[in-house]
Structures are given as C-alpha cells and as structure tokens.
Amino acid sequence: MEFTCEKSDLQKGVSAVERIVAARSTLPIVSYVLFQADKTGLRLSANNLDLGVELGLPAKVTKEGAILVPAKTLGGIVSRLPDTKISFKLTEKGTIIISFGQSNFNVHTLPPDEFPALPKVKDGKTFSLPTNLFASMIKQTIFSVSSSEDKHVLTGVLLDLGKGMVGDDSSIRLVATDGYRLAKRGEKIKIKDDVKGKVIIPAKALQELFRLIELDGGEDELNIHFSGDQISFRFSDVALVSRIIQGQFPDFRQVLPKKSGNKLVMNRRVLLEAAERAGVIASGSANIVRFEIKGGKLHLFASTPDVGTIDEIVEAEIKAEVKSQIAFNIRLIVDVLKVMETEKIVLELSDNLGPGILKEDGGSDYVYVVMPIKTQEGV
Image 1 (tube, helix red, strand yellow):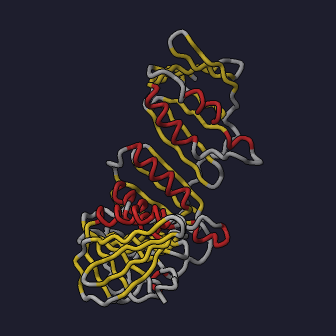
Image 2: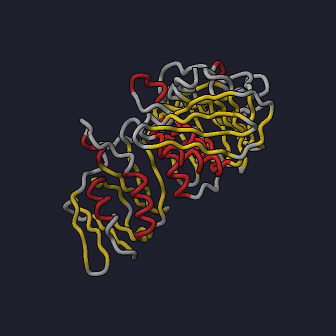
C-alpha cells in the first residue's frame, strides 16, 4: 500500500474517526483505524462495536492495500505534521512509513483481517432529508439528554416518525429529556406511508454525526436507514452506524402543557444576556432564578447570601397577563436560549407549580419544557 494526501484532508479524517475508537476495550483491535487505499482514493474506518464510522478522503494512490494503524499513535502524529503533502508506504515488515520532506515516522501496524466491518442495517425502513436540517434538529435537542445511566433510555434521543398529535403537522420529531426538561423539534418532510416508528438513538452517535456534518459542510442529502437494533446515517462520502437503545421512552405528549397563564414575546439575545447575568449571582444558590411578572414587566431575581442580589427587568410583550412568579434553574434556560434560532422567542409561564415553555416566534416546530423549582417565595 502506498499513497499521498494533503495534511489538511488527513487531519480532518483522522480527527473524525479517532473519536469513535474505544478508549478501553477487551478487544484490542478496536483501538486501531483501518486504512483502505484503492483507485477511488483513501477510506478510513473505526468501529467500537457500538458505533462505527467510515469516510473517504482524496488521495493519490500508487499502490492499493489495507492496514490497521493504532489510533492513539496516529492521532498524535497527524496533529503535529506540517501543512504539506504526507506520504504513506507499507513495508514488507508490516510497518507503515509516514513521511514528509526529509523526515519520516515508522509505525507498527496490524493486518486488517480481524477488523470488525461496519455493520449493514438489514431490512428496516429508509428516508432522507437535508443534512443541515437534521443537524439543526440534533443541536436543539441533544443538550437535554440525561448524563445518568440510571435511566438508560434517557441517555438517547427519540426519533419519532409518522403522524403527530392534534395540531402537530410534522412527520419527523427528535425528542430528548433528562427528567427536568424536555426538548422537541419537529419537521415536515416527505416520507413514505410505511416509514413510521420510534427508535432511541444514543447521544454519542448523534454528537459524532453532528461533528461529521460540520466537517463536511452538510450540502448533500442525509439518508437514514433503521431497523429494530441498528441505525445508519449516510451522506456525501461518510457512513455512520450505531446500535439503538432498547427500552420504552417516556410519552413526551403527556409532558407538553395544554395551556399557560402568561405568554411573553421577547428578544432572544436580550433574555439570554439577562439570564447569564442572573446566573452569576445564582451560581451560589443552586442556580435558582425567580421569574416574576408584575406591573406589566418581567423581573429576573436571584439572591445568594454573602454574595448579593440581582433584580433585572427584561423588556417583553406580555399577552394575557396574570400576576405570577416562578423559579427555574437558570442554567436550563440559558442552555436552550443558546440553540434557539429566531430573533424573538415566546416564553409561556403558568402558576408556581407548572412548567415553563419556550418556543421560537415564527420559527420551526420547536418546544422546550422546563420544570420549576419550589422556593419559599414561590409557594
């Protein structure tokens, strides 16, 4: 095997597959990256048995072949190479010579025979949508997944396909929740009548898919194929396959409130900056910030003993005003404001024990529900 490629292309590919490689595994071979060089160019693959990726890179191949290179060593070398053409040549002794200018590395390799091939999703259902659209859906939901393994299903994002509830004309939805908040993003796309169902995709898989889309630019269509235990994503010259989380995802429809007492329309950036300022004081008191509507204005109030207080008024158009006050973990509010895409957002507040709801004003089908915190002032 012998080929030459640009360092920038190599860096992009290696950084993408290196993240998939298992840090700790009883199967040493999954700590390697598979290099395959043929007349079409260079392909890199990594597979940790739960998640696998394969992507193509431009390369001038003078001799075809395949070899396994240790991921940790490979990543360390490539990140430190100069921005020039890099040559790879496999020796008869089974080492790979990585050279540039008058310098070279000589790295031990393994034959590719035992490397686990990227799984193929058998049967199942297939649909497609714009790659950047799905990336936007991931961005607006994935931050709400649980980091705790106690409820394994909540460490993934629900992909829900088919007809929605009354008033929901979307055909595809991503939903994530950690028990304290829930994010749902829907879109109306063309899918076949038989493409219905629900699967839970591991957050890790969607995180890596999002990064791959960002690296690629996301101009092509994304093809998604899923069965009962696996799901694959293919776009451009990239393929990612993941196991599906088994279990019952909570019925998100039960969480979405039917009505609220107050509806406020305000500038997203203004509310975000005010929330971040309130968070400075609230960080010493479990991040609790009280939202209070009085006198036709929205007040954000936080207090921490021996630190100080903040009472900030946020300009808002208040509809159907009912005097109320409700407290939230301000970090959960900041998180969603950072991923909302419209200039103006809608904040719906109910009573002291009801959840808060954030939506985009005139934007996509996006709903974020956040549970309140009981405080002495709020009850």
